[in-house]
Image (cartoon, rainbow, N blue to C red; front, side, top):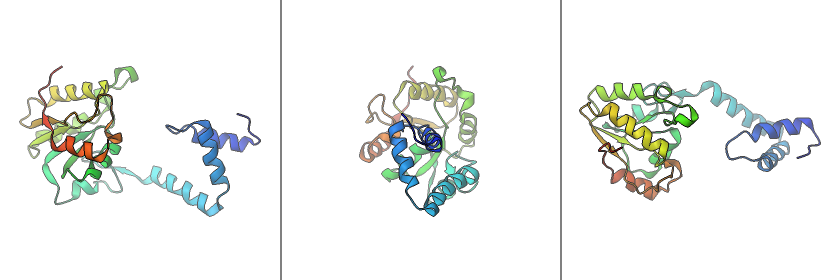
Length: 203
């Protein structure tokens, strides 16, 4: 793609680095911003910079938060006997949107993927084992995407958690194999949480 401006080219290249954004879409976004009032663009850029500099990750569950502890972990009405294990904060948002789950969460920060060089030590698994060992949680729900990486991670967690006196369950397979939690519709995801089944650890 030929650009009439080096500044335009650099801006498009940066926007195109975002997931799911191609060069043509990036160009359309950059031209839109270029035609907006300067104050509006400054607010946009400022919000992103503030997010990067000031956002926290909950010290208990790992979810994105404005404070050291997220609003879910500090909510007095949440069922503290339930911990739902998810890949990232997008999955927390997806499950919360179903309004079917009232427990706590644990965000792993990814999935085990040897092909991508991601091993158990790269995830927040130690904190999960610590939380499970305290005895407050009675059930841990393994709500990971129905992919090869998701199943590998679930089986690894099962091996680590099986000797701790806590019920291990996984969401029902209302979500097709290869499907990701964040893209499931709310009805399907809500039913998958409600009809979860004990995890037996089959390889």
